[in-house]
Length: 274
Image (cartoon, rainbow, N blue to C red; front, side, top):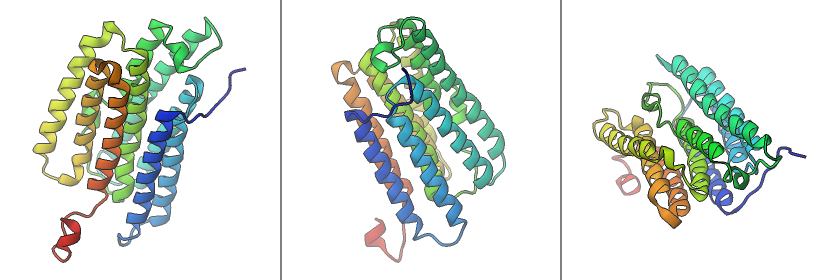
C-alpha cells in the first residue's frame, strides 16, 4: 500500500544537513540580537525547518504533496502572524496561491501515475512523459520563476534570521525537486521555454541586486538569480546536471546564510565583520 514515507538518500541527506546547519546558525545568531518576540520566532524557525526536512526526505510523490502543503501552510501562518508591513498580507496570499498551484501539479502527476500503477516514486514518474512535464512545471512555480514579480521583496518587519529562512528554505526545496528532475531528464517540449525563463531570472535577479537600495532585501534577488542558474544547469548540464543543481542549492543555503544572517559592518569590531 502507498503511504507517507521518508527516506534520506544521498541528495536528501546532503541538503537536509545543510538546512539543519543554517537553521542552527539562525537560532544561535538570534541570541545576539536585542529585543523582539523571540519565542514566537524560534518556534516558527523550528516549524519551518521541520516542514523543510519533511519535503527534502519525501520518499514518494504522495509524501511530497503533503510536505509541500504543510510547508506552504507554515509559511503563510508565519507571514500573517509575525510579519508587519504594508503589502505583506496580500503577498502572503499570492505566495500561497501560486505555491499551491505547484502542489496541485504534483497531485496531478500522482493521479496520472495512479492510472498506470500504484508506484509513485520519482523513478516511476520518469517513465511517464506527461508526469515529468507536470513535475517540471511544479518545480518552476515553486522556484518563483513564474511569475517573477512574486519574488520581489516587500518591506516587512520580521526578525532577521526568520526572514532569511523564509527565503532560503522554500528555494532549497524547489532546487531539490529540480535536481530530481534533472536525473529523470527534462522534457524536450519545455526546454526552450525553461531556458528563456532561466536566462531572464539570472539577468533580472543580478540587475535588481546591483541596483537594490536596501542590501537587506537583496536575498530575494540572490534567490531569483541562483534559481535561474540552477534551472540552466539542470537543462544543459548533461551527466553532471544533478550534481550541479545540488551544488547550487548548497551554495545558496550556505552563501545566503553567511551573508544575510550577519549584522553587517561593525566599526567597533572591523576584524570580525570584514
